[in-house]
Amino acid sequence: MNKSLIYIIRRFFFYCLAGFMAITLNFLIPRFMPGDPASIMFAQFKGKLKPEALEALKETFGFADGPLFQQYIDYLRHLFQGDFGVSISYFPQPVTEVISSGLYWTLFLAGTSLVISFLLGSIIGIYLAWNRDQKLDSFLIPSLSFLGAFPYFWIAMLLLYYFGFKLDWFPLRHAYSQYVTPGLNFEFISSVFSHYVLPAFTLIFVSLGGWMLSMRNNMISTLGSEYINYAKAIGYDKKILMFKFAARNALLPSVTGFGMAIGFILSGALLTEIIFSYPGQGYLLLQAVRAQDFPLLQGIFLTITFSVLISNWIVDIVLLFLDPRVRR
Image (cartoon, rainbow, N blue to C red; front, top):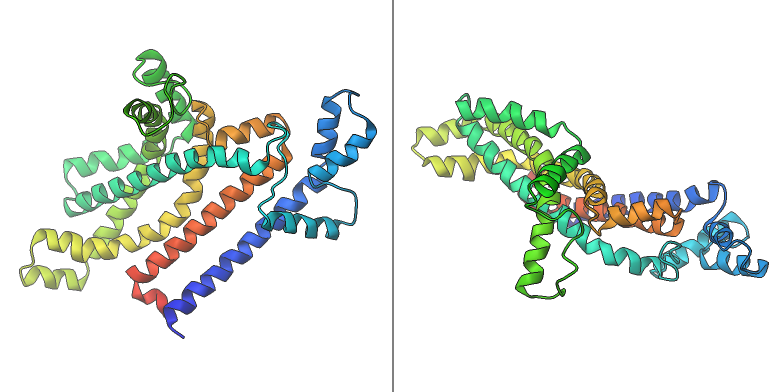
């Protein structure tokens, strides 16, 4: 069998195992906690529901009485059918509908921010490595490294106060204005963009320094290689040397780090969404915590986990074609 195919299958089963462990953990944690979603919801009605309704609610939320193993089997069966249960805070909406309403906003915010910061940081890192020890190099490296050490929420609150509240350049909350009609029209797109700028800039600003520093260090190491010196000696053009020979090999560790950064940018996006009331997974997570909405919390946890696992698997496949040594 082809070595590349074996590698892809091996990585697939590795991530399947990680996903299975996440599913099991997601099942066990709420059942080891005191109470259950049905009892919480039953108590909120303050005696307005009959005791018989409690059993029906437990069955609805997947907390029916019975052996733990049987509950686990039922949980897996519902899960593979795409049934995550019913949300408490958005009752009687299914969890899948609630999550899907905010998932594309999180993917839009976190995905575009990660790609922009990766590309921009890599390009700046390539330029700084080629022109190292100059004034711009001496200024940008410590400045962005220092600013990147601040947490996402601190930068988000600073930008929200100064550019949103004080200068009133950008909206303070939500993903688009309530006065526009969603659709492929200029008003809606411009509204989405204006609401997107501050949350996206928060994520880009914090992660930019790491990508830039990583790419700069990789480039400096690559530029000292013998094949680069040989290419210089035989007269290759500067741009070909910089991008075709040096940058391509220096990019490999950054591509590996790209998969790991997906989890960090998602965690940053969750906090940023809460601060800007951006209607993504972070905002839903806050609502679920406030309402003790265990089914929604479980659904968000699994959604984020599988998004990171699938993204890392895709990055592994991309790395396979960029670096033939991975196939060995």
